[in-house]
Length: 211
View 1 (spheres, helix red, strand yellow):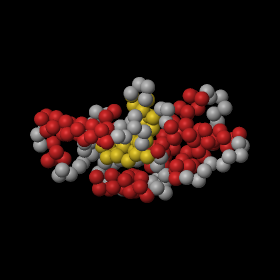
View 2 (cartoon, rainbow, N blue to C red):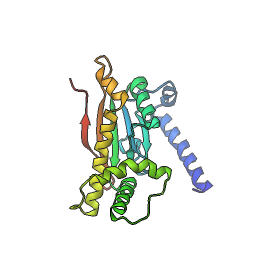
View 3 (cartoon, rainbow, N blue to C red):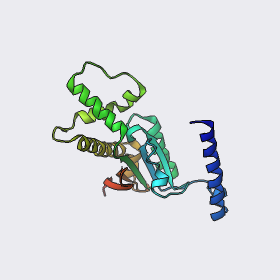
View 4 (cartoon, one colour):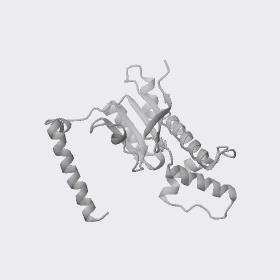
């Protein structure tokens, strides 16, 4: 991005802030005093899925964690720290794990699984990205995609990934502890998929504490 492009962002921020103040003069002074969002959004880093934009939300509405292919690894201190803080300090009521159609991370894992099955002889390079995606590659390898077209296979990987990450969230310490405590605020975990071609979100699954 050129310096001119960066200046465009800064100018846009100035215009946005002025417009917010015109509509709600005390918005930023109130925002500076604290936050109390009810939703934690765990999503993909993809630039086409900006959570506040696609849900018409304001600053302070959504607590956010994003990464490549919307993963929630149970050994990932970054994701676990966000979830812990969101549940135990912020007091969120809903966790939404959000994937999307045409996910580049899911497509890369599908390709890696196909290459491994074809025994191309070219091992995956050991990089931060391949290490990060290795659980998703293994998930793809566990699926029967033989009857699927390329687009159907990718959709199935995207949806199965969402459900798997929801399961991981539900098995994490912050959620199991909250669900086991009758005095704790109840937290519901949702799995959503955002359709890039439609601009719409669909719910695939939701989980809550069992009575």
